[in-house]
Amino acid sequence: MNGAPTDDARDVRTTAAALALGDDALILSHRLGEWAGHAPALEEEVALANIALDLLGQARILLSLAGDEDELAYLRDERHFRNLQLVEQPNGDFAHTIARQLYFSTYQLALYRQLVAGDSAFGALAAKAVKEVAYHQDHAEHWTLRLGDGTPESHRRMSRACETLWRFTGELFQPVEGLDIDWAALEEGWLTSVTDVLERATLGLPQGPRTGAWTAGAGRQGLHTEPFGPMIAEMQHLHRSHPGASW
Amino acid sequence: MSGSTDWPLWEVFVRSRRGLSHTHAGSLHAPDAEMALRNARDLYTRRNEGVSIWVVPSASVTASSPDEKDPFFAPAADKPYRHPTFYEIPEGVRHL
View 1 (spheres, rainbow over the protein chains, first blue to last red):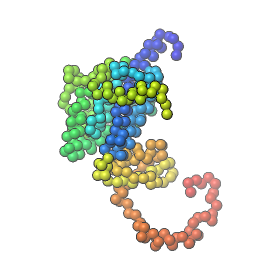
View 2 (cartoon, rainbow over the protein chains, first blue to last red):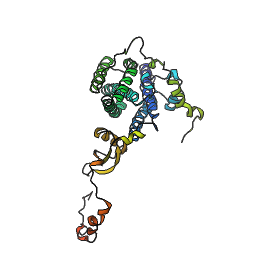
View 3 (tube, helix red, strand yellow):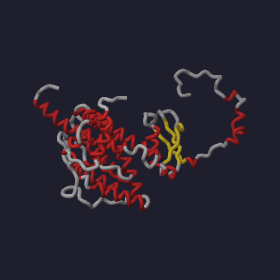
View 4 (tube, each protein chain N blue to C red):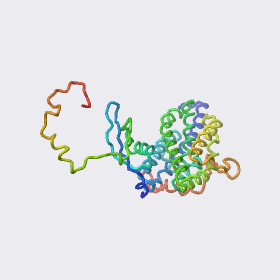
């Protein structure tokens, strides 16, 4: 690193973007980890834990680009996290978790594909992560199809989950400082892909608003929803109680 | 975890490298074949064990029974000439 002003400016932008993407991965990883011991089947528990570990690996690399990974994960307060409000939403029932996975992994896959093609500090990370995320998307898609086009009960729950989380999806396409992304194209691709999956799952696209009043979306500015506080309290508790503890 | 017992059981076969045959790795529960394949990926190939996976419904496997053990296997015991142990294995032939 040298002291030229253009490099400093670029570093600030890279740090901001690394925090946004790193926090998305970290927080969703923690949420998925909460399924350990509670998943509907042992096989599914392993699948969710695998996805959580993929995301944790991404979070570690991204947060290391922004500073000390442990300090950032364990010692920041709620208002300093830059993750999307979608990823902090509670697991709910299995359908909620799958709807959250479908919305987020479809977004992350399209975003990382653009990062692979682009010229940024995230190209190498994205090239590796894109294969992991493609599997996350495939997992969410297959479950959405089975739950949506399953029993009346699974259809009702999957439909409710997709509706409930819909208002958090407008935020996905707020431009992130430091990322050179075609956000309009990203949103169009996301809508096409999600519409296709939901229609094949006999669910149809939720009708509620995604942007404007009555929608969510200030996670990138550090404003989070109510369930986020208790979640990070649990996530940070050990590190704060025993600073520097290690295995 | 009670739900897993409602799902059928599948046998998983993993090919660890090109050139080797698929080997039985274990079994798992899944609602259908596509999901069984994905569960197998998560359960049996996490540490880079495989390049190909087969899943077969366990119900489709016909197995020999312990009662048939003697007529099935005992006659082979005293026929050592059936084993290719009297040949030297050429150098460079692996996986034999």
